[in-house]
Image 1: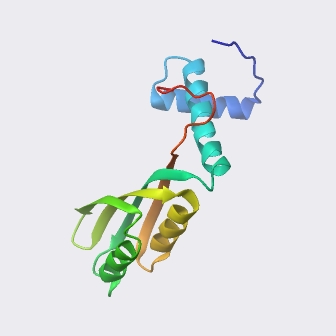
Image 2: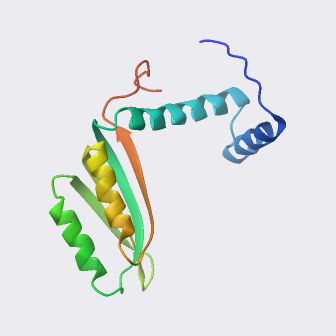
Length: 142
């Protein structure tokens, strides 16, 4: 392990301490390591934008919106090469949550997700991308 000294301004330190308390980290080093790992994962997605990935597209929508369910189903069928699996949950009478597991080129997956999220009456959407290759120097369990 390497020891690194970092200087943070007071506002950033307060925010870090808030996260540490909220997530029950044992110490600042654990929190900083996790935050660095998350930043490296994000950087790897951007760095390998032309590479392959696994992804989870999570979105909620109004299932009673005219024709929306059909449009969403058609979008998935039109991109069947990206879709591995999906989970559909009825949240209440009018709301559904869908989780789609995707695999493909990062930019193609991102474009598909943006298309789904932009559909009218999709209330919230988020895409989590995991690059096929971990960043250089990352260990298998890190």
